[in-house]
Length: 165
Image (cartoon, rainbow, N blue to C red):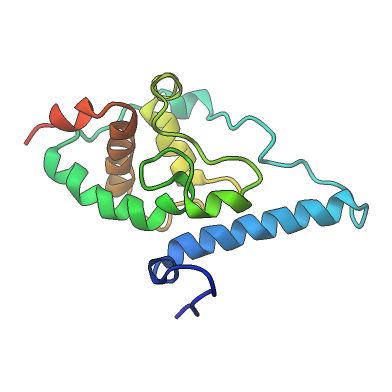
């Protein structure tokens, strides 16, 4: 479906979601470059504004308890859909991060992750904000909540060990 891009590994071209995220990042950079030259009125750049979830979303509690089985099932889902920007280890240093106008979230930072509620992570994942896609229509509700649980394991590896079997 996608042609192999010269200089990128075959695993890169076999990941359409990663490829799409990288392309969206390039488009975002191109738009900001055009508007900064005065070709069009400069829009508010989303990547510069703080990304704050509504209080109602922040207060939503994750209805799915983490299990070892679900966390294991989410690893390939994360790698396919999220690692392109957020990195295989969740550190925000994925291969597409070089084209992003702002670094992707670092899920390995315990302080930043402690400040973010499950509801906020879920809302951001679901609604998206350029260049991050909205996963609301692409991933089922339960899978997004399970991804929230999986993302938590980057900052708190013991989260995996304490997951019920």
